[in-house]
Amino acid sequence: MKKMLIIMAILFIATNLNAQWFLGGEIGLNVNNRAENIVENNTDLTRNRTEVGFLIAPKAGYFFNKKFALGLNLSVGSTFRIGYSNPSIKYKEYFANWGVFPFVKYTVLTYKKFHLALEGRTGVGGAHSFYKIGEDKTEKGYNVFAIGVFNITPILGFNLNDHLLFEAGLYFLNVGYNIDIFRDEANYPYSFVKNSINHNFNIGFNSSSILVLTQLKFGVAYKF
Image (cartoon, rainbow, N blue to C red; front, side, top):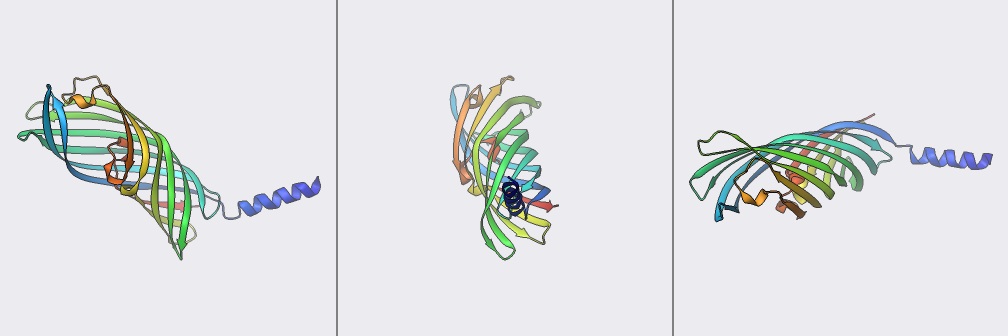
């Protein structure tokens, strides 16, 4: 029995020899310009829009070793849209976004102080919209509740030293499956969002889910 306890203690120490808690955060940016088809008052319309979004995302977790880490990521942000509807009616939209994401990260390649990792996330998020059409006053739009079934993103990292880590999340290469649940309680004028459920399997830039709004994230983490 004594030998068994000694072996278990040695295995525990060996497994956690490089274990470290970490605390950090990320900032994200999204810039997008695209045309989309909508239905308004039973009429097919084309909207051209420009979208700019940003977020702040604190994160914390635990490195079990040099390759494997678990953590929790929180995010809050805003997205602004300006566009024209077929083609002369100007509209503006504003979104307040939030999210909660447990994640697991595994380093697949290391070269000197650089590394490439894959980060897998699940979680939930939401968005609350406000809109203005032409010279009308700003109105409350629709709400979205999103379920992130899975998202996998490549992460580029640089270890400045044993404690300080810089990372860039390549979210334009994200692969994932998300479910967005739209609820319109304010007669939002575009019928494609009225009380609908969208299943979004995405690769890279083609995602329309609110959970994959950011193309790039830059972050820093401190290992204790």
